[in-house]
Image (cartoon, rainbow, N blue to C red; front, top):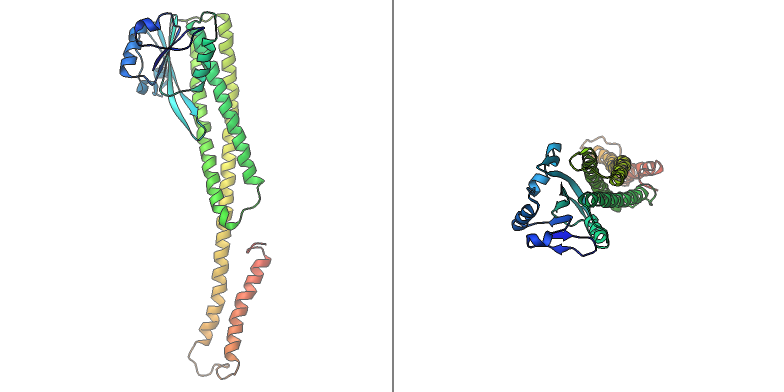
Length: 321
């Protein structure tokens, strides 16, 4: 999809070069080869592909070519049930901004509605900073929800009632998956913030497209917001690691409890086997051989060797309350 955004009007689909005339912000959403070729014709610049936007080295993410400034970063998209990372590209040129993305992002929709509701003319630099502000706001929302989820997991780990032994394994496995996914999301948001921080620094130092004092102040605010979110991400990563260690500790406790049960079972099986082995020996001079109560005595002795250790283990708390 190839869209043109103009102040005071809804987004317009671009099918010819005339459709893009006068639009300060052009947006390629999961474009076809024909749409990429049309965007290159309209802008007069090369349009980067998805593979090029996905490059990880800084020289491939931030550079100038001709009269265009090429910027790209990985960006997190959070859905109700999942999240994933997709690259986003910005091509800033005199009087026009071209964005390239391969999935929908709510931040772009927010800026598109804001542009459609504006009556004043829009310049490309302002459109780019509006997008950066909206993206940072969206990442802040994701981190806020992540912090709330981690608080909920912390309560589940430390404040919930002790589950039964049959439920403990499933609950701990589920907790381990939740903590792991939270760690993945935190890492992905950190990568997005790192890319946005590089973009903000590059734009601030770029002399090819000078920003007005007002836009410079807004860009500086974006940089401060990114740094504060980076601090929050570091705190979140520490909490994820803490919850991971705590969950693994509870798993280790459950394993120790299982070993205790095996120890009890092994121990109470040894003594009766010993008694049966002694009285099963074929020697003539066994004192209880001709005793009337010898059979019942041996059974009682084996029962005692089972019951007494069980009482001892129970009093030590190995068998639960």
